[in-house]
Length: 634
Image (cartoon, rainbow, N blue to C red; front, side, top):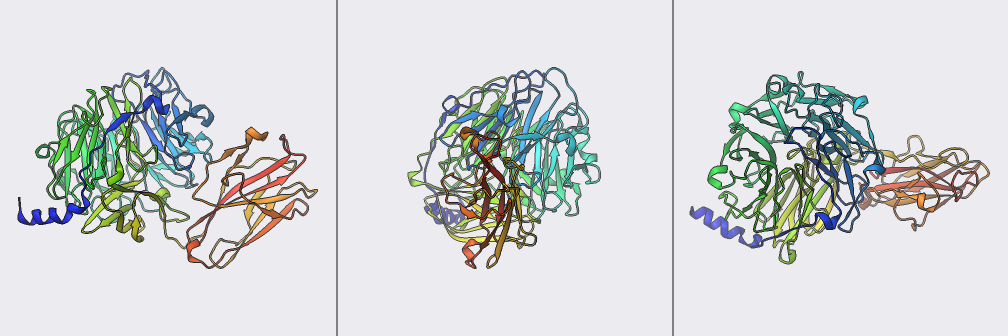
C-alpha cells in the first residue's frame, strides 16, 4: 500500500463504521401485490416509477403492468403499507406499457408522471405514451397529446428522463426508443407544449442509429450544465457533452465510454470522492464502471474491481446501503441474480468491492428489469424495489440496525424560482465531514425503465454532524449550511428574490359557485409587509367565513366526502387548526396578514384556504370551500 494512502486511511477511520445490513422481502406485508402481465412480446420491458405524488412526505409507487390488466398506483399509507389507488387517480389504464419516470413539468408543485407505451392492450401502435398531469395530489389527467409527447414516431418507447437541459428553469423530456432509433427524442418544454428539438439540439445524427434503453442528465464535467448519458444496445450508447447553448456534442469516442455491445441500465455517483461524477452501466456480458478522469474522459475499471459480472444486468442503483460512508452498487438481472457490490475500499482512491447480494437477503429469483431505491418507511436507510418480467413486484426493506451509524436525506424545493427547475432537478448536493466530501446529483432519469426517489442520501458512519452541507443549484446559486445534525430528512428551499402565490385545487361550490381566494393585486408575502387576500363568491347573506392557515411544504388533500362534501378537498393540514375569522360583506371578505421581519420566516411556505357557511351549498353540511393558495415568504 502507498504510505500516503495508509495515512489517509487512518485519517478516515473515525468516519467509517464496520456495518452490514440485511434486506427482507416485504412485498406482501406492504400491500405491493401486483404482477407484470404483458400482452407484448418485448421481454425487456417491466418498469415503473417512484414519487411522492400526494406530497405527504412518503414515497408512492407506480407500476406498469404490460397490457393484460390496468397499471397500478400504490399510495403510501405512511405506516409501511400501500393501497392501490389507480382507479381513484385515473391511471388504471390497460396498455402495452414499458416504463415510467417522474417530474413536475408544469411547475405547479406536484409531481407528474410520464409513461411509455407500445400501444393499446392487443396491438402495437404509436401515440400511446402518457403524460399524467398531477391534479393537486388527488388524481391525474393524461395531457400527452395536447402537450405533444404522446408519440415518438413509432410504437416504441423505453422510459426517459426529465431535466432542464437548456437552463431556462423548466423540465424538458428525453425519451428512449429501442425498436427504432428515430424514437429516441428530446422534447423542449415551451410551457404550453413540448417541442421536438432532437435535430436542432444536435442529437439526431447520433441517436438515429441507436437502440436506446436508458438516459440521464448530469453535470459530468463540472461546468454547470447537464450533460447527457444515453445508454443503448448493440454498441450504440452515446455520451453527449452539453455545449451550454441548447446543443450537444457527441463525445463518445473521446470519452472512452460505450465499451460493451449490450449496455442497458445506468446509475451515476461520485464513487471515488474526487468531485467528479462516475457512472456504472449494466450489460449482457460485462458491466462497466466508468471512472471520471476530468475533461469528459473516463476509464472503465469494472473488471479489476470485481463489479463486472451481474448475470445479464438491467436496472442499477448506487446507494450507501449500510451507512458506512461508501457508495455501493446494486443491480437486478434477467437470470434472477440480484447483485449487491459492497464497497469495502480502505480509502476513496483505492476502490474495492465484494459481492454480497445473496448473503444480505436479496435471494429472490425473479427476472428483474427495473430497479429503484427509495426510503418507503422513512427510517433513514434506502430500500429496494424490483420490477420483474412476468412476475410479482418485489419490495426489499433495508433492515440496517443503525444504532451505531448515521445518515442524512435531502430533498430540494425550488420555491418560486424562475431559474431553478422543480424539486431542484439538476442540483448537486455535497456533504462534508472532516476531510471527506460526498457528492450526489438530484436527477430525474431512469435506472432502466424506472426511477429512484428524488433525494440525496448520505451514509455518515459514526458522524453525528455534517460540518458543511452545500447545494449547488442549476442556475449557479449556492446554499451553504454548517453543523447540520445527522439522522433527519431535510427539505432545502432555493434562494430567490421572486415571490409567488400558486393556487391549489379547485374548491367546492356554494350557492354562488366555487368561492375564489386570491392575493390582492400587487400584494406579495414578503418580510415586513402586509399580505392581503380577497375571498369572493360567498353567500351574499353574510354567512360566517374563516381563513384556514398553516406553514408547510405541502399538505396532502383531505377528502371531505366522508363528512358529506363529495368531490371536495381540504389542503391546509388538520381540520383542528384554529382558523382566522373573516367578515363576510355581501359575499366578499378580505384579510390582511402582517408578516414580521424575522428572517426565520424567509423561504417558508404559507398555505391558505377559505371556508364559509352557505345554506344553499349543494352538500350535506352547507359549507362552501375556496381553492387553496400556497405562498412563499421572501
